[in-house]
Image 1 (cartoon, rainbow, N blue to C red):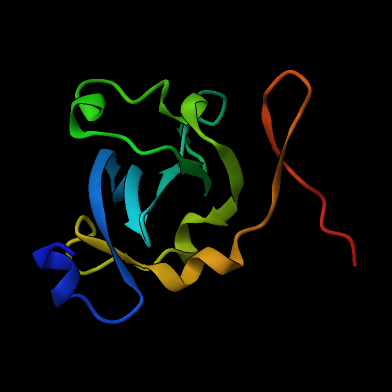
Image 2: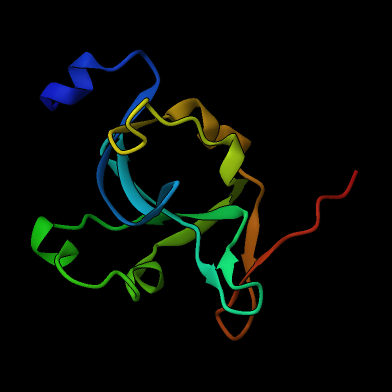
Length: 126
């Protein structure tokens, strides 16, 4: 357990590293119970703005050297997509760079992989 982990309130997850900060980190990696999760809020070229949702991925174990440089290909290394969550639903610490409230993970909306490997949000049926 890291020093920052011991200082966080229960349920909060330290942000290991982040990229593309615009109001909040637009891509970041957190760890919980020896699992690594990548949150990716990609820039939408058509809207000329960032997406309003994070796509969340379960990642293999990644060493620090693998996080140097660009993270563009990092989502393609995911073990699987876990779901999407609105950016506004993710609670950050006051710095918006140190931790998130990990209790958000169970509320992910499932995503599916299409046959060509693109991630799409699944339809929720009542």
